[in-house]
Amino acid sequence: MTTTILIYIISGIITIIILWIISIEYRLKKFFVGTNARNLEEVMNIISKDNALIKEVQSQIKTNLVNIDKRLDKSIRNVKTVRFNPFVDAGGNQSFAISFLNDEGDGVIISSLYARDRMSIFAKPINKGKSDFELTNEEKEVLEKSK
Image (cartoon, rainbow, N blue to C red; front, side):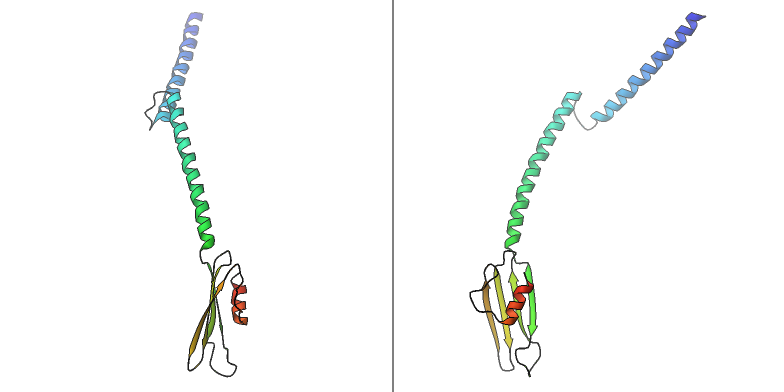
């Protein structure tokens, strides 16, 4: 009787071990899917190569982003307009001052003075937020708005 019980216990243990091995085999097959690797070392080498490639691409992306940021700082992004009436009793707000500046404060202010018989347009360069030419009140206002 005891040998029969012992055989049942051993066969139960063997069944559990076989199921455990099958489970491990199944998990390993899932792990190796999509690779041509035959063992864990090959998988680790493939992952290491992929990781090195990702780091290289990430470095290139960072370099490109720095270059793009430098170019964006020099592009015109601050555009503001002020409309005004230069003559107290005549016309409407047909005159204007418009600024085109980058983030460094470089660019141009264009002003237009409208009268019934003529229209004058002026352009004044701006360097680091300042102009070598005298600015009108409206041009100063548009310069302040665009900072």
